[in-house]
Every structure is written in structure tokens, then in C-alpha cells.
Length: 395
Image 1 (tube, rainbow, N blue to C red):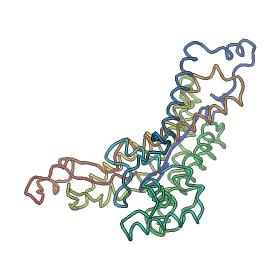
Image 2: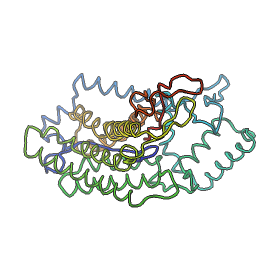
Image 3: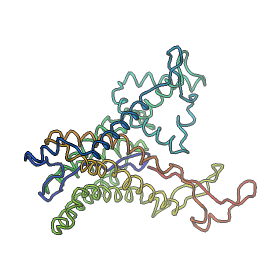
Image 4: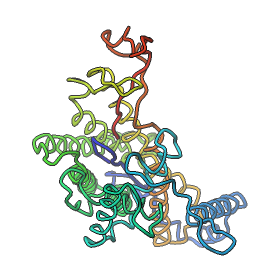
């Protein structure tokens, strides 16, 4: 869950008493015949919850994969006219940001070969030269070609991105990481899984860097800070919970706290120049640059911490815990429990994390009263007072 530029990633995971040697929240139900009988007969409320969840999931899946069709059976394209000047989806709306994020993490692009990417590049180059779609291609096919290139190739160097570090690998990489962190039990396992997660985050940050080169010193310092924070919080929180029996109910949430702490520290360190240095560039409604604002940088970093470090981990690290508590009477053995838990983690990561990343817009609208004195009292080209400015939040 890490990237100082466009997206990242991301915190994550399931249910267990971390580093306490206590019983896992995913442990199987009692082996007694009474418990087995109870597990085999879900209550009316549980049946309603399961039925409702199943219907909702099925409906969502059908809605997601269905494509409108004409009376003659041909597919109806709902794609907007293709352009290279703006995104496919309107980024000023939550729905547009959400659809764009789902597009961005589409794991199917991991299957593209170098030849596939060259073909997509060729289509885009032809469009740039002629201003028109190549003969016989639809808008949807051109948008797909653009997506293939943007998620698979570095925007500056043009080189293919390392597959495990691509955003399209976000879900398949984070499902096992989530499961490992939340099922870890004991000091060694906790430290190893937190280290593994932060190592992946650093790889993700490197692969998705905005420039051709990378400041290795800053990257390694950020990596060390994130690992130290994650492991330290996990071990300290586990020790406190172990010493105070009344707090043991919070045991499954230790991984969430660790990821929040590590993510916050990572973002704050890698973007220190924005909130404690030169700040970020701000522009007026016409796009005219007004200067650099440290207060705007502080607001951008704060929003990024909120969306990435706090909101992001909730879906894969908190929701599965709550669902598993409801479904626990139905878990007849440990294998069924583990499969159910992995399915919940997968659904939460792929379905809810894009929602968390889409809540706050990339482009911040800021009232000038919240900025430095030099940005107050400005006038635009028409002589009207500038009351609001815009800045890039980052993700």
C-alpha cells in the first residue's frame, strides 16, 4: 500500500491473535457433536444474511459482466468517443474515479505479451498521427489499447513494468499477503509477514515511480521506516493486549494498526518535501500556476494518509474479521474456514479497495483562506477575486 505518485497501495487482512500464541480467530469449531450439530443448522438470521449476501454478489457479478445488446444480438458499445487528451471516465465524479480504478487494477493485463503491447502502442501512434481511429476498430478497442499501454509500460522510459509490481497485480499479490499477515502467530511470523508486506510495497513504489531514475537513498530510508513501524507496532500492540486480558478482543485488529502506522510513516517520509519543504504547485480555475504552497502540500498528504493508510486497510483487514464472526457457526472444519476466509479477503480487496481510493478526488479544490497570506487577495485575468485554487493530491 504504498506509492507517492498515483496509486498504491495498500494495507491488508483476516483474523488471529497475533504474536500472542493465542488461539486463532480462524480456529475450527469445537469438535464436540453439539457444536457440529449447531454448525450444520444455521439460524434464521444467518440464513437471511447468507442469502442476501449471495443474491447481492450474484447481482453485482451479473451487472459487472453483462454487456448491453441490440435486438439483432450485436453488442452495444457504451464507451465514450476515444481520445488521448483525457481519461475514459470522468474523474470529477466518484463513479468515474471508481470505474477508472477498476480499469487500472484489471489483472487480465498481466497476461499480455510484449507483442500484444507493441500492437497496442502501434494503434495509439496511428491515432496520434491521423487523429482518427484505425480502420475497423471501435472506441472500446482503442480504450483497451490505451489501458494496456498505460498499466504495462513506464510512462517515461517506455519499458515494460516488472509484473509483480504493476497495479494490475495488486489483487493477486495482496490476497496471500493479507492472509499471511492476519494468520501469523508468534513473534517470528509477525515480523516476517510485516517485512514481506513492506518489501512488496517498496517494489510497488519503485516499479510505479514517476521518473526514469529513482532516489535510492530516499527509497531505502522509507523502506526501513515502514518495516520498523509495522513490526514495532505489531509486537508492541500484541504485548499490551497479551498483558491486559480485557483487550484481547482487539487481537485480530493488530495487523490493521501496524499497516496504518507503517503506511502513514511511509507517506509522510516520502512526501516530506511537500508538507515540510517547498510545498506543492497550486493553480487557479484557468490552470494558471500561482506558486508553491506548503499548506496545500500538508492538506494533500493528510488526505492521502486518510485514504491510503486508514481507509485502504479497512476492507481486507477489518471486514473479513466481522464476516467470519457471523459465519463461524457454519465453519464445519478448518479447511472450509480457510477457504471462506481467503474468498472474503479476495472479494474485499478487489471490490472495496478501489472504492476507498476513489472517495477523495485526485484534484483538490482549496479555499484560499486556508493557504498562506500571499495567495489571499489575488485576482484572476478578469479582475475577479481568486477564492479557490486547485492542487494535485496524489494517491
